[in-house]
Length: 402
Image (cartoon, rainbow, N blue to C red):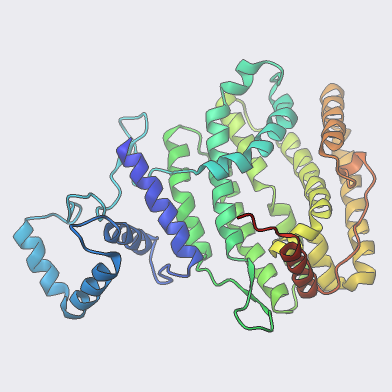
């Protein structure tokens, strides 16, 4: 338990380093960032009466004089191996190897998730169980069917949400410190390589649980591709640079990768072969759901500077043609959806249809997949002004309680 708590601390410090631009952009495989995270944790540990400021001063002066020869001498004197502690606090040691219910496999890093990620993942997990379990012959109304697989599904989705939040942090637009209140992008070192490195512990865990397949691994890689495209597209919009429709369409298709990851896990957990027809049908359905969600979340996504297909179409086609082009895209997807739907078992198709109608009613969304009316919200022509106005309204409505 102590080791797990320590790893959680390190993960939180890694996230903080990313948000402050303190990550090492040259780090190979993330080892450099983890070392720095351990080092920062070491600095804040109480030691006699030394203040944090004094510790920083001492370390700064020491590092001016220390070289590799000095460290080799210290290592020799302390009779330490490369993977042993250099303090009694166990803070600078690389992460311990951790066994995961198997005598044959070990993983270098234990994947950790936070409470906020678990909370955010909850609605997705509920929707997945209610919408996808029917494709595996499972009854969502039987609790044992849910709880049998919930630990695997919950942990995986929460872990993905945690990485998604880290990626979105790199897209935040914050007010400049100057009076002009120009919005500038928050500078965070969140590269495709670093995100891929953060997925490695989850990959290893799924391997140890006997759930990993080539298809599942490819879907996890799709997540990395999506986050990379989201950064590319949203950062381009914040600079008023041009974006390509090819990148936008690729991103919207990749966006539901987490549902496909969970679905592929279910095939492994239930010992079934992957049903490619079901996967293709659900992929089209996921595409339509993502568009529906983007229409519903349009203003919030503009404020947060996150991927939204309506934002992208507006930037590419302009405010007059964007709705027409998106409507055409929706129409083509609906035709494809109907075609696949006819290939399904009629009872399965009917059950899924009823579930989607149910989800639309519960969500209260005015853009309800194929089962509701598609309503495109008023387009925002100047996103920067919209953000500024919304920020000013929030400031005016805030109340200070003393």
